Image 1 (cartoon, helix red, strand yellow):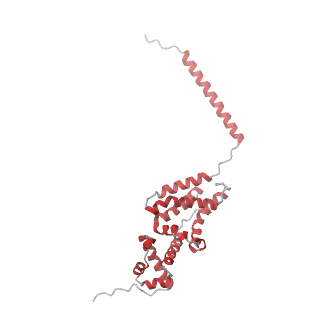
Image 2 (cartoon, helix red, strand yellow; image 1 turned 120 degrees about the horizontal axis):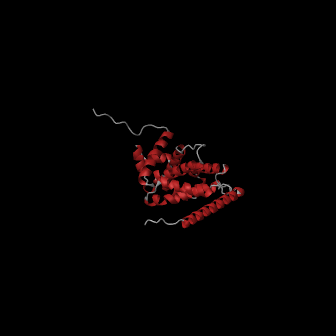
Length: 245
C-alpha cells in the first residue's frame, strides 16, 4: 500500500499562515524580481489557493509591501552589535559594510524598496519608512558618538552625515541593481568609510609655541648640516692626490 503524503495545506493560526506566506513570497521575489512577482506562484509554493493569499493581503502590491516590511524587520534583528570600546572608525565601517551587504545580498528586494515603495506619495507616513529610520539609526548613533567624543566636527548635523552616507551607498550600488554590474563589498565599504572619516575628523589644534620651537630646531639642524657639508667639501679640496708612480 502506497504511503499517503501529508497535505501541505495544514491548519495554521493566522499569524503562522501570514509568516509562511511572507517567507515564500520573499523567496519568490528574490528569484523573479518585483516586475514578475506572481501571487499565484506564491500560493502554489505555500500549498494553498490564490484566494487564501488574498484573504490575508488586499492585493499583489499589498503583499509585496508586507514582504519588504518583513525583510527590514529581519535586518533589524540581524544588525551587527557594535562594541562601545571599539574605535569610531571600525564602528562606522561596520554599519556601512552591513548597509552595502543588505543590498548586495537581496538586490530584488532592494530595487523594489528604492524604486517603487520610496516613490509612493505616502511613503513618509508608511510603516516601511519607520522601519527604515530604525535601520539607519545605527549609523546615526555612531556619528553622534563621534561628534560627542570630539572625533568628528560638531558643525555638521549627524542626520546630514547619515544622509550623505546612504546617498553615496545608493549611487555605489545603482549599476548593480539596474544592470547587475558587480562591485567590491569590502572595497566600497573601505572607501566610503575613509572619505567620511577623513572629511569629518577633527584635526588636532596646533600649539603655536611648540610649532615655533620645532621650526627653530629644524632650521638650526639644517644650518649645522650645511656647515658640516661645507667643511667636508673644503677638506676634500685641500687633500693632495696620491702619487701612484
